Every structure is written in C-alpha cells, then in structure tokens.
Amino acid sequence: MHGTTEVVPQSRAGEIRLYGWDSRGENWHGPNELGCCSGPDPRLLKSLRSAPGKSWYGTVTCGMPGESTTRFFAMVHDLSDCAVASIYCQESKVGPCEIVAVIPANRRARLREDFAFEFLSFARFLGSIGAGAELQVHEAISAALAQPPDSSTLVFSISAGIWPSDKDLVLSCCVEKVAVTLERWLVRAR
Image (cartoon, rainbow, N blue to C red; front, side, top):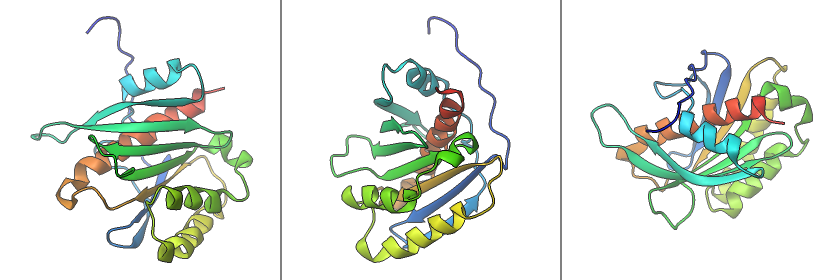
C-alpha cells in the first residue's frame, strides 16, 4: 500500500445505540452494544471524506476471523440531519440486504419530525420491510427518538432478510463497520 493510513481508534461502548428490525424473524431489537467489528473502516472513511458531493457508492469488505472476506456495496447519502446507507450483498440486484440510518448527537436537534415515517417509507419503497411491520417499527423508532437527548449516536437498521442466515454474522459486522464509520464522518462533516 502506498501513502499513509490514518489510525482510527474504536468507538467507546455507550456512544452508539444500535436499534433494528429483522425482517426474517419479524422482531425489533435494541438498544444494543456494538460487537467485535465496531471500529471505523479507515479506507471507507477516507473515501467518504474525499467524495465530491454528499453521496458515495463503493465497496466495503468485511470478514470474520478464520473466514474469507465478503464484499458488500454501500450507497451512502449525507442528509441534513443524518446519513442513510443501503448495503448490498456481493453482486445482488434484488435490493439492499440492510438499510442503516445514523443520527449523531450533534445532528439530533435538526432531526426531521417525520424521520421515522420517511425512513420506513424509503425502506418499504426498496422492498426491505413488509407492510405488516411498518406500524411496529415506526412506534419502536419513535420511542427510541423520544428518549431524552444525550451524547449518544442513534443507529437504526432494517434487515431485509435476503442474506443467507448462516452469513448473518458477517453482515452484522459490515453494518457495524459502516455505522461507526458514518458516525465518524458526520461528526467531522460540514
């Protein structure tokens, strides 16, 4: 590798609260602590920071110890109050396997009143959540947002359930890596 690589420390536990919907099991979870993959991806962070606009598309490689790495694709958008990422598995053309919204504490005051509705509408448009789950997920997101603001970053994730269940661990690793990297990017962004 040529050039220098920025060393980025892992996020401390408690700074990021992860909530999510698993479409396969039809259940809500969170807030959860991040697992073993909770450090930002230096290559992804550098790519996001050097992107000419407020959107980026590219590969994210994740793997678990003792297993081969898996290549994902991510489409990221920096909105005024959060970032949204659609994560696609390998060469998938059926839609994203996961949709992630990252709301850093420093953007929480700007959060749109209809955030939960708009995030779910986007997920529904992409086919990542069934019509029967919308109310349950909307209420869960709204309840998480109603908590008194603190210095935590909120992450909301919707799993489409199209990724093979025996590969869930590597997808979780990718979601965490993307979420932590987006949080780092947004905190320093314009």
